[in-house]
Length: 131
Length: 339
Image (tube, rainbow over the protein chains, first blue to last red):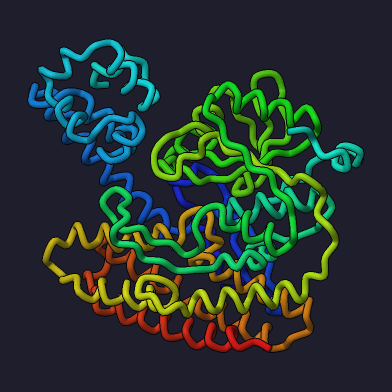
């Protein structure tokens, strides 16, 4: 890639961050140049974020209808999936899946709520809300 | 546990932050340069033989296969240490409080300290880039009250991070959990003749790219091409496009220097050519630049399909990757036989 071909069109997902990119100058010499971002990257980052936001929105709807606990919503909102939440809390996946049930979740003791809150970087009160 | 005396007697020079493409090679280049061994990021990456390709379908990230364009996390720190004969000290901690106390004590000695952290819990990262990736590397070089002064190589300038946030990032759990890992050289790096080391590193890296395993190196690229060729337009298309998008993300998102580290490695080959006076390395650098341009064309075509600006054509994407696999096999075949 030549320096003049380094994309500078910007990438919303970088929030103003400029990336270091290796490219060659007119003499074929490699230089480190900064890039304001490439649309291609914005597309694929956005795609991954949209997918997680979609999963979170679906989980939120289920929770609003009373079909699920808010836990699943908070998991996706924190960009996690079941496997990652299990690793982070040290709980088995099947156990967490049970806590996606609204009634079971409502009956959770403070110790488990604290464990979920800590893993998700929330306080226990936020865990039961849907905002 | 005590500091090596020769490091303590060296004058306290102000830490120099340099922007880099990749976190781990950037941290090591900046750390060693600080201790008197001037090293570019590309040289740190190349000497560690860090270029790779791996397609691991049985390790899933958010339901998608693990795809890597470089050696696994910590391979650069360890590979470089071995090649340069460094003695790096690594420490992990059971208790976050002990981890913070140790970091503060090392900073009080005037040492910059390397850390492994999660990206998700670092507030200075752009919101949209905060994914649960636990093998990020950064350098801490000071503390002002409740905040650390951080040289994060993928940022243009030094950043600051509140102690509580850095703690959360250092002790994040999950795959590749950092467990508070910190590292620093136990003694200053010795002056070495880099030319023969670079040649060895290139041969070693080329052999790894030609490894006779189906999921890694050039064979791995060809394997991924085959998997993409099996996708069908119109059938589970959203899922297929998510897979294609994932390939491009791993190739281009922060930390690769473009084209899945190919441009970074081409820059190393160029530096190695100057160092050794070997013209064939300049040729190899130009060839790898051209291969990198192909990776970028692949990424562009894939992104247009993800956005729906072009019809999903898995066969065309697979063909493009097959060509890349072939070209890399030719290039690394030559480099493996480097005299």
